[in-house]
Length: 111
Image 1 (cartoon, helix red, strand yellow):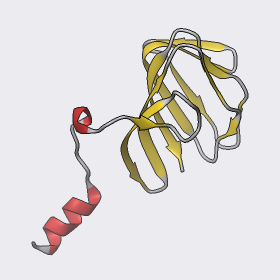
Image 2 (tube, one colour):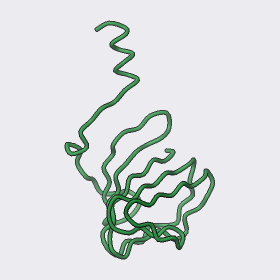
Image 3 (cartoon, one colour):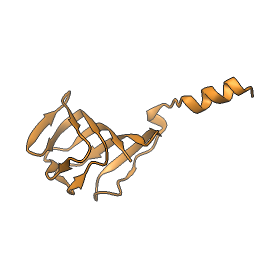
């Protein structure tokens, strides 16, 4: 493989998310995640909350981006329905993250 091909492989990652399995979250019981990719200290995941999920209080090490794909997520009292997003700055604290109905969202966060 040429140096150019090696550099291209290191700079890009492509995957079909349908082939990536769900795994249990290390943060909360019943929550599942799909690890979609990571680079330069940031990770991207699909997260699935079953109905009644209450996520533990946590501080953001860096910026966090959330985009709701299905259901409703409540973040610090703000209901986020399908198509809604949130952006949290580094150092902010999530004290009330839950879903009464269940939801699926895309998240990009600092590791």
